[in-house]
Length: 254
Image 1 (cartoon, rainbow, N blue to C red):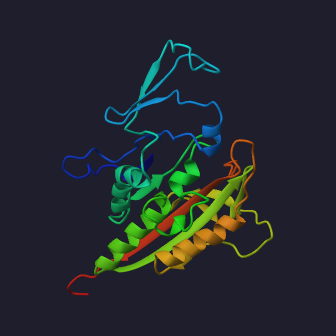
Image 2 (tube, rainbow, N blue to C red):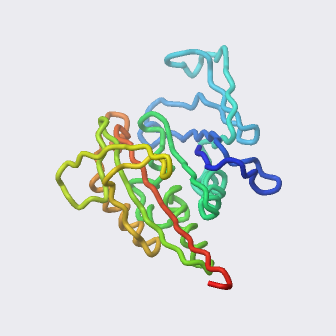
């Protein structure tokens, strides 16, 4: 699910420490699958945080009895009927709070093409205004942006927010916020003070969530996607969207 650094802080009362946790989301059949003889073989127990799969490999016939079932436990499990808001409130909202307290947090989606990573992180591609805070379809990124700016507007601190967006495709890094159409050779470096960073990656200062949504729309047009038989919005490429928040606290003596 993500990590928080440093990890010495033990979180709020009654909550588990936010270090590294794993959440699994099992999507429902899509429109195409519903027209074909497909059926679910995965059982999700959200309360117990467990996913059960049949032990038989390959195609499982509807009439065949599942043998050798295996059950896997995770920190959180979301079944096919789970909502975007449910996922965000459970796995992301608390991490955003930690970011605004000065910790580095990461939320990433991992899985094969067609499993719903883009829908979870950004919102549905065919859903109008999904990146602009639609309460039903909005993904983790736009919801995080709204939460960040809502909190910052309520604070009395001096704040600045910068964003960057890159894509990894065939081991090549592309700056999705660069206005240049020419290929740039960007490289990843490790620094003892700043940590891992990409030399030459553009960072854009934003004043509110609407500017972030405009940037996301612009970068989406530049992003390379490979069409496959499984899903026209393929995830052969991987994108990393980073939000950096700087807060300045002024004491009573200035």
